[in-house]
Image 1: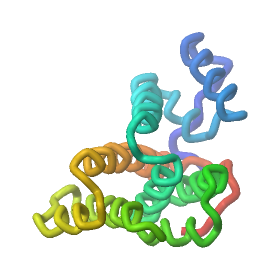
Image 2 (image 1 turned 90 degrees about the horizontal axis):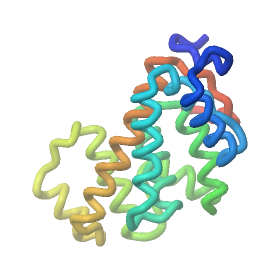
Image 3 (image 1 turned 180 degrees about the horizontal axis):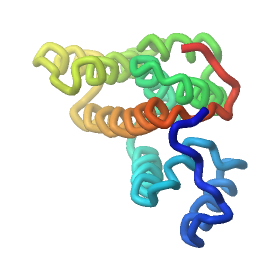
Amino acid sequence: MARIQTINRETASAEINATLDTVKAKLGKVPNLIATFAQAPVALNAYLSLSEGVTKGRLTAKQRESLALAIGQANSCQYCLSAHSLIARGAGLNSEAIQAARHAGANDEVTDGLLKLAVKIVQQRGVLSEQDLSEAHLAGVDDGLILEVIANVALNTLTNYTNHIAQTEIDFPVVAV
C-alpha cells in the first residue's frame, strides 16, 4: 500500500485537475506517480517542467529512455523500471536494448558513454574524477551532453526517490528490479 496516496480528484483544486486532465490527454491516463506528485503542486509542476525540459536538448527519446532505465536500475526503482521499460518500447528500443540499458550498456559508443556516465553520477553522488570525464569525452560525450545527462539524472532521481518514499502502486506491466 502506498505511503503517500494519489490525489483525490474530487477534492483536488481546479488548477490541479486541469493539469491532470492535460496529462491524461497526452498519456492516455494519469500515472500513479503523477497523481502522487499532485499532492504538492510545487512537486508536480517541478516534475512536469523538468520532464518537458529534457526533451528539448540533443538527447534522443531512445537515449533519454535508456538513461531512465540505467538510473532506475542504479537506484533500484521498480516503478520507474516498469514504466520506462514500456515507454522505451514505444521509443523503439527492443528487449535486448532495454536489458542492456538497465546495466549501463548500449550498442553505440555515445549512448554507452552516456549511460556509464549517468550511473557513475548516481553511484558517486556527482563526485566525478578527471578520468570519469575523460572516459565520457572519449566516448563522444561532450560538455553539453554531460550537462544533459546531469539534468536527466536529476529528473530520474526525483522520480526514483519519490517512488521509494511514497511506495507508489505500480500501474504499468511490472518488471523485476
